[in-house]
Length: 248
Image 1 (cartoon, rainbow, N blue to C red):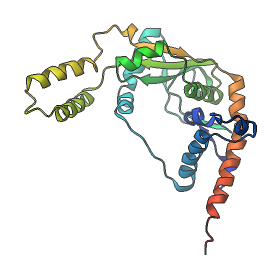
Image 2 (image 1 turned 180 degrees about the horizontal axis):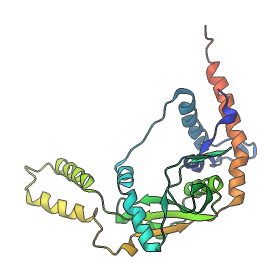
Image 3 (image 1 turned 60 degrees about the vertical axis):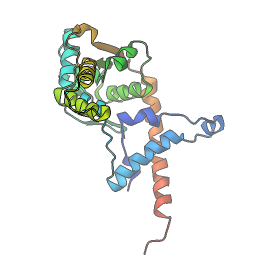
Image 4 (image 1 turned 45 degrees about the vertical axis):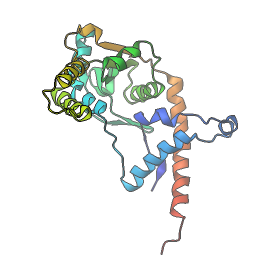
């Protein structure tokens, strides 16, 4: 196994860039526990082909409404964005940008990552929050993979598909433990829950929040400089793992 050829996914860099808590560890060049745990996930996938895919209802919604969220963003900006279906890679990074503007993905002018919020309470706070550091690193990996100079994170408030609404209704019925689905208290609860999941009555311009992320050459170089360190850690861990017990 040659770990000197490993490329690191854009989505991993939020964890890979984390620094040790102790000042002495940082000065000694040690990797943080968070970084090491991310490397172990990469190791498990590369060596054993094991990758744990975590799926939540929020992620499921994001997948199902991605096209609607892209349409919302295009409608708000008055621009046309292409959906990217190509996984990219270079000497250091791999990544799959969501949408872009330009002739093609490798000559993109702008890149955006689409995030479809589950509900209003997780959407509105994005107006007050600073850009997530992990997403900033991820976008800058994309910039390096494509040459794009700008872009950002787009949070959209799209209505939940009916299959998700129906699933939530079934879950609510079980939790409330009512006699039937015709129970007045259940019907009222369903109405309140559905209103929290459907947003078509809200002006589309109020359902898109764009967090700009500028290209950061210093950050890109920092990530590239860390790649040899990460590869060396994987190499040493592999040797340690393989030498736990003699093989016959």
